[in-house]
Every structure is written in C-alpha cells, then in structure tokens.
Length: 194
Image (cartoon, rainbow, N blue to C red):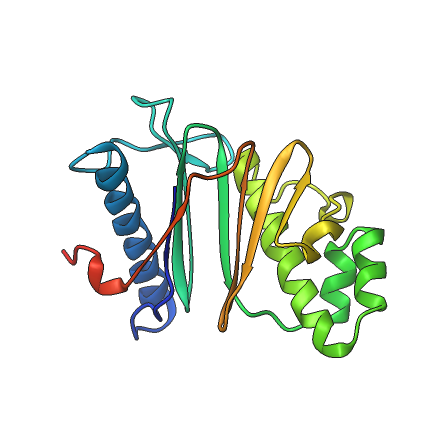
C-alpha cells in the first residue's frame, strides 16, 4: 500500500524543517503499519550498509519513506519498495547531462522547454525510487540507468514496476517488483502529532 500526504509540511526552515518533514514521514509509516497490519507502533529499525532502513524483527515487511516541502510518501509492501517525492524540478542542462542516460538525454533534447521540466522531474523520481528500492543509495553513475520510459505513468525496467504521478506541486514515484495494492491520500491532520 502507498500512503501520500500532499499538504505543505510545516512552516519551519532549514534543518528544523527537514526534521519535521522526516518526523511526519515516520508518522505516516506508523499510520500505514496500524492501518495495514494492526501494529500499534513502529518496530525497531536498523539500516543496511548504504543506510536503507528496515525492520530486523519483521523481514517480511518492507517499507520506504520520502518527503519534500509539498508532501510525504510511504510505501509498505511484502517485497522491496522504493518511493520518492520531490517538488517540481526545473530542467537544468548541466545537471540533466550529469544524470541522464543517452536515451533520456535524447528525449529531453527533443522536447519543448515546458516538456523538459516534466520529463526531467519524472526521470529524477524514477531514479531515486529505483535506488531506494535496491537499497544502494546513489553509489553509481546515474547515466548508466535508463528511465526513458518515464513518460508513461506505469512502466517496467530492470525487473521492476514503476508508477509515477505528476501533481500540481510535486512528482512522486514508486518502484517495486510487483504492483502496489492501492494508494491512500491523507491530510497532514490525519497523522498523530506527538
């Protein structure tokens, strides 16, 4: 299941804002675990060698969280899952060259200026969700990964299923070996405020 909050997350700035967004993401995880599995609290969390969190006492439950200024996202699945949510990104040629596979680069070069922003944002969240699903973080040349299929809302690549949403203020993606069972959109006020 995928959980999504599309409210702007708090008005703090700098490190405090990131802390509050991260806290809200884990509140969303807690909400999802209670809703899906009847768990009253988040189990102990460990991290793999690249920093991907997991539940050592519940190896059959996979999760991933992401947050940005405009929303938070949490995926819970029986297989490895990666999620990413980002505010709308503006196309920057030098950054696009540094992260783009030749097919992605060709796609952007052939697009209108407005379309470049859309494609660039979708490529970014697809790559992030894949690397998070793999549990490796950004430890490779991003140009080696081809997500030129990202113009479709659902596409398959590297043995994974990708689903991308482009919303008013952000892009979001989920990567998993199998389809997610659904999506639940909540308000920030639905989450527990401790």
